[in-house]
Image (cartoon, rainbow, N blue to C red; front, side):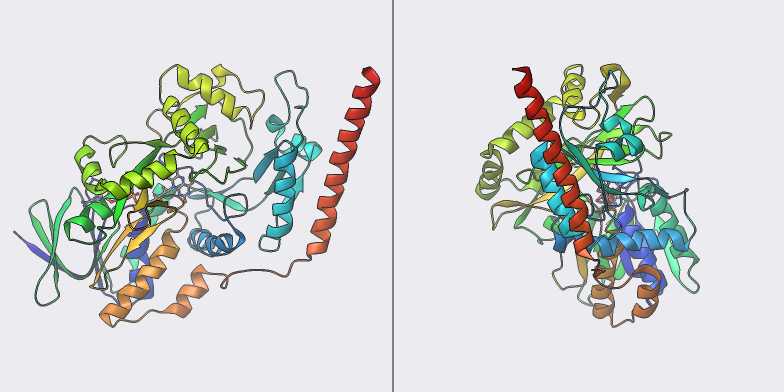
Amino acid sequence: MSQKNFEVLIVGAGISGVALAYELARYTDINSIGVIEKYGDIATLNSSGTSNSQTIHVGDIETNYTLEKAAITKRTAKMVEKYCLQYHYQDEIIFSHQKMALGVGNKEVEFLLHRFEEFSKLFPYLEVWDKEKLKEYEPRVVLDENGNERAENIVGVGARGEWTTVDFGKMAKSLIENAKEQEGKTVETFFNAQVKKIEKDENDKYHVYANGEEYTADFVVVNAGAHSLYIAHRMGYGLNLGCLPIAGSFYMTNEKMLNGKVYMIQNPKLPFAALHGDPDVLAQGNTRFGPTALMLPKLERYKSGTYMDFWKTLRFDKNIAIALWKLLKESDIRKYIFRNFLFEVPFLNKYLFLKDARKIVPSLQLDEFRYAEGFGGVRPQVLNKDEQKLMLGEASINPGTGILFNMTPSPGATSCLGNAERDLKIVVEYLGKNFNEELFKDELTEGEYCVLPEPLESQKARVNLIRAEIARTQEKFEEDYSQKQ
Ligand SMILES: Cc1cc2nc3c(=O)[nH]c(=O)nc-3n(C[C@H](O)[C@H](O)[C@H](O)COP(=O)(O)OP(=O)(O)OC[C@H]3O[C@@H](n4cnc5c(N)ncnc54)[C@H](O)[C@@H]3O)c2cc1C
């Protein structure tokens, strides 16, 4: 058995693993980094361009983000943008589409207008689009199959000219290539190497075993998606956590239907993103609707096995049962889970999906889209046994012993460089190495929280104009209606 030694060893070559390899190679004085990957290439699971929605989640049109959360995601999302622009990946890895959150019906319209007032301070480029503007920018969200305007009030809060879309699979490949380019650094990748065991010896060295090979390292970061928790459990860490894999599927239109990203308003009771329509950069810009959310008893989509790994990683017990019960006793969540299960049932699925997708495109017809076979992935959502509840967002286990384990559900691809920054700081501190933070900030950030003192009053004035217009339309409708009676 040959032995390979590194200062830092990363398990998993999805976008989280390779983003860390890149940052360590470029911004620290760590000289040797190894990346061990179970499959034959970079980013074949959730980070592949076909597995996720390709969205840079900034927080501007994601209506489930609070202002505080959006301020943080804005910073990390900017890192993806700045990285891609630094290497001139425009229209190759990063793309610009218009984007919006769409409010349908008076309640959602008012919610969006209010959100606009609050969020445009952080995102001064946001605009409010009424029906007339929407007809121009995104006609299919306004017109029905007869070319008439849809009856409900609608409003879009969005932006044009921003970087919105990334082929995260390609970005992952570029990250490892650029890591390998750093002068004086050794960055090695090992494929078809499934890590089965990690041990620490009495000299604080980690021994990592994969497919008959032994690797040693001073620090190990496990970025293996849902399998991070599986490996952590085997080492006795994170035993208060369980993993609930939530698969996401998509539906693809036969041709380009939307000019940009259209997101729906999130039901705050539901832990997963609301349905959206996105131009797919890997499918000639055809619209991809989704993702759905289905609990699946396996850790990897479209790969054989991992059923047993699921049970081992769930660590089912009374606390997990209570956490699941708390989720299921909420009627909105119960209905949502059942409906999402039906979205996977052949034939029936398209009819049901049509109903939901028509909220975005009222004229959508059954023969205009299909179930996107082979698209989608699994979000490793984490259940906290101590709190008996589902944790939203990412989870990281840091026992403080020179090893980290990361689980990264959505929007983990957007936050890959931000998460890597967090881990980099832990690694350099533990190893007594140096971080060139100045270069990092200069290349990848635009300052801390980017809250800009945008004149709020002018936005309020615009919103109030739209409110007045809606009220006028409503009054006119009621007047006409009473005259007809
Ligand atoms: C349906 C869906 C839609 C999404 N949409 C978006 C979006 O629009 N925007 C966004 O930012 N995020 C999105 N996400 C989330 C995003 O795709 C993930 O957060 C991100 O890809 C996670 O990257 P990762 O590197 O942590 O994990 P992965 O990409 O899953 O990579 C983990 C790697 O570890 C390897 N591995 C596992 N076990 C071992 C082992 N024992 N030994 C060696 N290697 C191992 C795997 O083979 C894999 O290559 C979406 C996810 C899904 C499922």
